[in-house]
Image 1 (cartoon, one colour):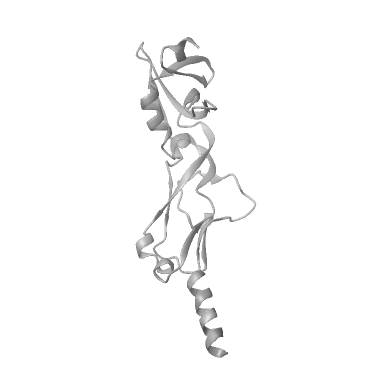
Image 2 (cartoon, rainbow, N blue to C red):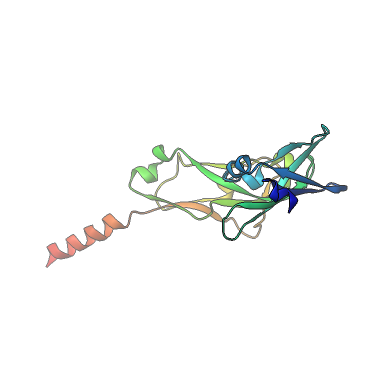
Length: 184
């Protein structure tokens, strides 16, 4: 409460076989950081007043129910060999050169982020999916995505779809109605 009254957002750093450490943040800087879609998969180096540093991964943020401002943060201490499960945002590249989209197809995103497991030093900030060779009625599956060695999805029982290029439906329905009217 004292930290919040002082205009800062409290938090805690835990894990790594060490005692928990209380931290606090300036709200303006923090809110800009929280807007990043890759926030939960981004590693941070926190520097303390005594000069020590902790390498951390965000684990939870509590928000005020009315004002929607952050009121508490949790961080996990990590090393390069720490194995973690995080959601990594998906980004699409080469939409303008995608054959399926050029033909009028529509990009339908099934998963805006994918939950992965791996060593912290191997987890990417985002998964970039290249649409350069994707045609209409084609799904982009996990097996089509290039990921660093040692990273695997949490879903292991199937090769799941992340996105697909669907056929245009609006123009097709209008064309079918026109053809029906012409046939009568």
